[in-house]
Image (cartoon, rainbow, N blue to C red; front, side):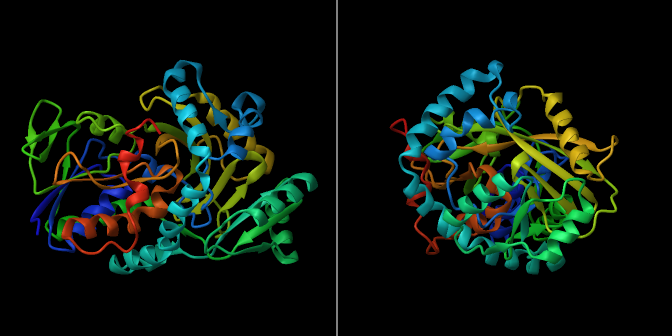
Length: 413
């Protein structure tokens, strides 16, 4: 069995993977360039989204794109400056839309196992209170959008997630909190939320180090393969060797895989949030304002409003108009997120079919990968870590990994 591993990427996928390896006797070193926890893993809505079985690479989603554009008041942004990034991605996404049933079949078993894996993780960290299995709300602001939204959710595949229309008591509570009372809504009953993302990052790192692992602050710029063995190449030229190398570097995984000839057409799907560090908002489950494509989450350290799907370059500067649009939504709804709210932007790692890449590379015997989890990185981190650990130790995988093979894009798909 392998004795040590290098995990490239210190986001939620990388840290959970390193922990899973350590608990199976493999000494893990995480290499991460950003020690300040600014990645998408820690800036998201904290939602454990087991309901999102329908792949976003679908024809209904593509046909709805024009009315969802930022210029039309929506949350989808396609910056002209980054057209060279998002246009090829959009064409591949259109190709994947014809395989939506296969995408659904790939996501379903991952999402079915997500909540049990989360329960196991927080129990092992002695942080059970951080996982709130109290569901979430989806709200609409007009009778027309409520009728259409409810019909869409009733027709959607939500896997193991359950929902019901909100009751009179819930409607009255929400109306008392919002400047615009909902015209309709549903409550998912068994989805979840992580209450403290930065705390989770800290505890994962502490537990990894206590188990003999290491966190190294450095930037991996490429992979090198020689004699069927992969090594991580650091900025400056140093090469790091290990029995196992795991690529879980989020959106930057594409360039790393490309350095050894693997086609991984990943894009930076950038999101924005405003976070009020102090708030008197009650301890409610997350609220999705579907008409505004915005989710509002109560964390232990404040209230967060998050939105936007901005397809482009990971290194392009943020667009201040996105934060201004969020402030407009917050003001219209009467949410207690003031002018001093912290602004954040981060990039979700997304592949054109909206299916993650999880597997063992054919380019080197010691190279594993886990990236491309789009909006589901937080949701799928613990179960993904378990799958990687099973591969690393030669244990039987609990599900078929073929749908997640990155070589699915080798023929231009």
